[in-house]
Image (cartoon, rainbow over all chains, first blue to last red):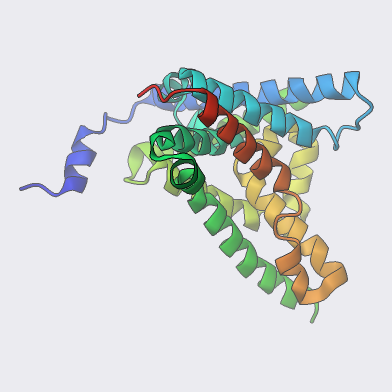
Length: 143
Length: 116
């Protein structure tokens, strides 16, 4: 009997250099797209450069959710790997796919309780780390 | 120039993530959690704010920016409210992203059928 973890490890394809290159291309593309959306917002509305960040992130998240719903995002994610799960697109995709997959369990116990199934860890560790760092910095700044 | 710096920064963060993913047993969930924690540490000395000016969207899109926004809003709130600010300011800057993700995920889940 093999341990389940060793089986997963053996099934995992050998790390390739092309994975890293595709990850770079994915991240760079998302970044350029975001910057382009930001520039368009600054040009066509009266928002300043720093105010344009929020609508840009909202547009990127909406696009990601739409692509996830259409089934395109999963295909892109297998190609670009970390290039698509490190940017905020990965956060949106994990929420959207959790919601979609649990849809058959109903509106409340399906979508409602499972929407943070994967993204929850990011929120929890983000908040815990922020609390610890915040306490340390608060003490440091007020002594 | 913001385009180039942003693409390089965001690309490099993703390459680091991919490298960890390829060479350890950690999953995407582990790696994003680690990067959020790193992001909270990068707020020291306004380091991440300088990155945001230099890289624009390239610095605000990776998940490290989420960690930075959490701590930045928190520290800003502590200036007026003392220790309670840590609890009050936690989600000050991150609300738009989380709200948008919930709303659009919910709408998409209502409209589309799961593909797999």
